[in-house]
Image (tube, rainbow, N blue to C red; front, side):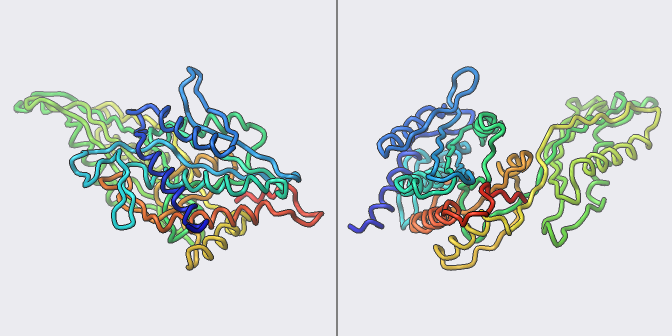
Length: 405
């Protein structure tokens, strides 16, 4: 068996072991999957520590290694928790039993993002024996609580690094048709639309129907223009009603109705513009019932801004070049519609890439799986990019290597 075959077999074995330890956010403790990962790192001589919350509950594993010369620090990040199974009966193979069929490995989290962890572990094992030749540092964090939406693992890690941020982060999300170098941000709001209660059959006191008023707001939303994409950010903003709640009795004109809004942000439609847009719409709605019903209340939930990296950033250049060679096709930079951890990192002025990894299907759905013959090119892309980023540079160049976009 060749060394390349042994590498692939080792990545498959680790991926299968991780999939076999369920780590559904909010359902399973991440302790078992992190313990299995810790054991693998220990067997391969990769020093690491546990991330824990204030109550001592596990949030992830991390480590950092210095080279022979001072230089920039780069971080490999992949999440160890997963989405729920959904309906297990909809799966052809049990979601917690790694199953290989026709070159694909099935199981929850195989794509998002346990394959990324398996690849990154082997990149570390390959690069660490030669770290005395590096100019810079290489770290990793395999965190939990991403799919819960709290991002507690990466937040705890970044809090530990306050004052010493990495020059760049490479996130191990799947996909290899492009390198994600930007993403829309998000903001969320709940509109509390008010009315005046009355008997639904009354011929005199007809009240003000809060559900009907909410419907007017939604109709206006569907017709109102938003900024379009531009040359620097190719996706437009989007406002999506995701829930509506109100009423509850056939004989009662409802006096309250709630609308949840998911707002996707762009640089041209950032949080201040989005808030102003929603507030203007509610003001127009309230003007139609001035004095008859209480004004609409808006509850805002914090979000993240849109971001896009400068494609001249050394990390982007290194990954694009190494990935194009490994996969045999160009690796253009692209902006993603959904947000990701890179949006959070952008709030800290830390550049991050995402979406360079294995070929996948069924992410967050039944029969999530990854194509096993894309493990090796993913490994080569990251390994070779890091060799370039950590290579000694001529004296007089920027030792930090920081080029934030």
